[in-house]
Amino acid sequence: MYDFLKDNYFIPLYGITLLISLLRYNRYYSSILKYFPLIIIYTMVSEILGFFIRDFDDFQIVYIEKYQYANYIIFNIYDLVFFFYFYFIFWKVVKRKKHKDIIKYGALVYILASLINPFIHNVMIFPQFYASTIGSIVLIIAIILYFLEGGIQKGNRHNLLTWISYGLLLFNIFFPVISLLSYYNFPVYDKLHLRQFHYLLIIATYVFFIIGFVVMKPMRALAEES
Image (tube, rainbow, N blue to C red; front, side, top):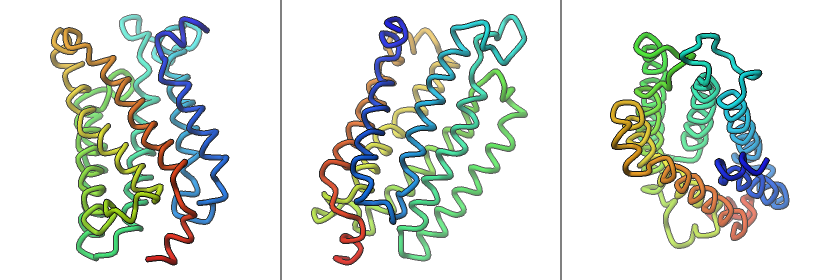
């Protein structure tokens, strides 16, 4: 357990965020974010399962000696759930038809990339770099559109979705570069300690989530105010 936490020190933050999300659930249980705790649970379970597959032979899912550690199928599936969940969230909350269309067509581009990428990289033993990069770009665009419609205004500092957006934006700006460097130029990835930077990004993202849960007003009240 000590080795697990030492190498994956960010994972307890998932549990802390989940606990706070449930303690504050009465403030958003009827809102568009009512299933957000399930995403946190899914993220935590995926990380833990990925750890066991990577480090324990009894949990391997790829029976090729060279790739016994491969746990990427877990995260390739996770990306699909994660991106489409947030595409749906931002598609629902933006008001302008033009912005809704941009998110919709961006999601279609991501679907296309997700269908093509397995022909380039085996989905069982490699991350789907191109699909996840496009997924991040589309999500960044969706967040920017939400901000353009007022999501970043001073009055929204008590809006849970605004804080979630900060965290998602920070993570998705950097993660595609980290992911691509880890595959195409591992010496640079290793020299720059990008694995640790990745972990710090996760921590920063979830700190934003926690701040959102702590300072949020009931989301129904926010709807009434708008």
